[in-house]
Length: 137
Image 1 (cartoon, rainbow, N blue to C red):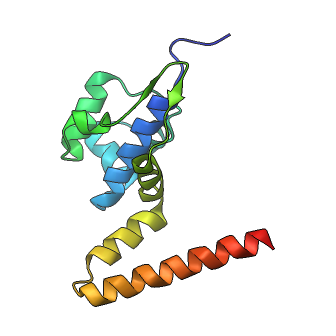
Image 2: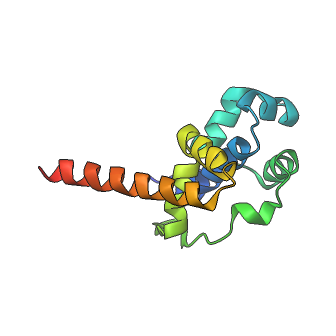
């Protein structure tokens, strides 16, 4: 039986976006929990999409993360039964939701030299191709 109130793909995507923004601004789960008046475990559940985020709580989260509530819903496609369509932006959001992805973006953004940035792209492309080739072997 499908519980109407249980979390779905959109809830998980919104949770990922909360996590991405929190990491982007360098805020810990503990700090966000403190600002919201909940435990850090509750923040974990929101970010994993285990617990749905009520509208009033999303408003509080958006204030704590200094992001308009509408940004959590941008480009979401899907519904309760259809799931969420995976767009290229979804993949980017998924990567940024990881600590490594957020750290990589932060470090990359700190590099001012266009030449160095291009070399990093070339390096990452070569590593990705090598990883892809080794999977086929």
